[in-house]
Image (cartoon, rainbow, N blue to C red):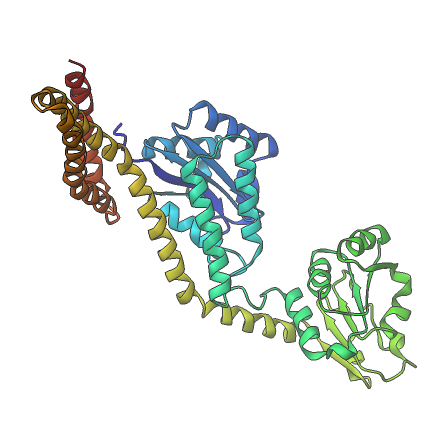
Length: 429
């Protein structure tokens, strides 16, 4: 099988883009399999020099650097499937520029379930550190991962791709922050400590509220969440007192009937309270929304807010894509320049050997005071002669995608012609 002289980045993986959750659950590696991946990468069975694994709740992607791209993709894919060949179409594989652009797009938030989400940057950074600890990262993937992190930061700094969350929990928290003035940010009550309640509590924890209370049927679960966001946990038995004293109530609990009823809210003062109902079915009786001072937003209203954020983020995609393309071009140029370094060294070594050989042969014909001048002249002439071909080699390195064979062919000429060995042989005589 033909091997390229120039190392290439390849990626094999599975994500929400190509597979439903049940297939991802079947394919995603266990902690033991993750360690096995690094062991196989180190012992050479993938025919690769470097390896990084990017692993999140929605993706498992394996990046390798290899001069045997086709063979490496085949072996890595077989290892990943682990006998589950029926899922082959639920995986993807990219080579070269496609692999590079894929990682940069992931870091920019263009490949996430929630467009522009921020968590992926921390996950990529963690993946790089994990691979560094296991000794599988080299200069190419180190440079690529750093390029990905830089791309992600630029995308969020230079565009609005990361502004305005698209989850209902974020929509609820943002609605509360935008509509309740800072001077009125009293007590917030979160009912439900599951995933949605936890997300709402996390988003609200930085809003400058006087206090956040977390209520849940299981007090221990409420305490865990409360400790995480700097809140106070209460049992669900305290619900009536909590909602009557709140400025904002966010409900995200289970159950088959409303928890916040008109009866609970009877005889309360008419001070304003915003109720954001994220429950399915609804946790707040619609009749509560008719009481004086109560402003009730249900799922439909909050979904409209989330959809607006999502549409705004989608408008930023054309602004993010040029950032991805620019950073991919920078990485491609770096990788190409790195590839010509051996050729430049061979070129300079070969010519330097010939020049030294000729200098030693002829300098005895000059008076000793002139020999030093001859040496300086020879070095100066050598540098001037090599300046143009060296610059041309570096320029040639910046090939367009799909034209890498030109560079590989030139490298083959330098190596196969034996210039370096010939010059060394001749200079040794």
